[in-house]
Amino acid sequence: MNENTHRVVARGERAQGGIDSFGAGALLQLVRNHLVYSSAMAFRGASKDRGRPPQWLARLKDIRLVGMESNGSGETNLYFRAPRYQDAAGELYEQAELWPTRPDPCWTSFESYAEVVRDIKAANKDSDRFDRTLLENFVRWDKKVLGYFDQVIFEEHREGRPQAVEITRELIREARKLDSATPKPRLVQVVGMLDMLRASAHAFGLCLDDGVEVRGVFEGEQLEGWRPLLGQRVLVQGSAIYKPSGKLLRIDATSVSEGSKEPALLSKIPPPLSRSTRDRDWHQPQTATSGVNAFFGKIPADDDPVEFARVLKELS
Image 1 (cartoon, helix red, strand yellow):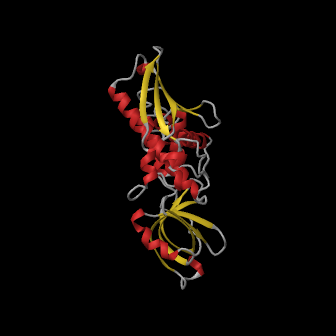
Image 2 (cartoon, helix red, strand yellow):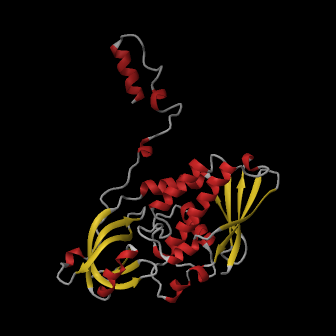
Image 3 (cartoon, one colour):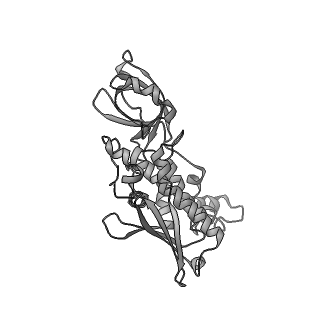
């Protein structure tokens, strides 16, 4: 299998003279997870498989650390070998394209990951390259790695020469914003013609009555129930997964059935019910002019109601 070698650079005081086992373990786990999730998104629009992963995805997980060196100035280089898509996932290139971000066959997971990083850095709310699972994993950089290193750099060869994308705290803040903006999934029933089925990717295409193409994924074990319905009008039940923009990213299907008698009313995608809110969204940092500091020590301590009302009006 043809492989490309890529460099990952960890910078910071703790990277000087090498990386200890704790830092190396956290870094290696996140690197592997992010690369595999990015590849899955590129081919099928879902970063994680809900059932048994397809064989090509298992082959793409064969990302190996082949070397490590330190330059003694707060920088440690890690070298990885990753399989090219044309070898690890060659069967996906023998079929019609289903997902719009299918990568160049000479790429590896590093190039797909670089595309994800660039979309997050650009705050692209309509991106097809990440979902909530992948965004949540980006936030973990802040907890597990960026508290240990100042910066992590990924080298990729998207244009045939080494280029780099950086994992920084600023990038993680953008990922957190996109994650918070992403609407929650909602249960849906959607009717349309099942016009595309990709067994190797556990993915499908559904053409709605207005001609709009909707993409989705299903558990691999469900394949036999889908095949006889190809080219027919079907009813798909599952969860609508949305982008931060509120547009549909995909459907995570739980079942499919014959739908010739289903009403046209169901041949559309319902909008998200609400935006996602997390506890952290309500946490606002207190400054010298906000929170308690905005009024502490400024309201008179005496009992003069007129003076109290005047100061309170000024603060409001």
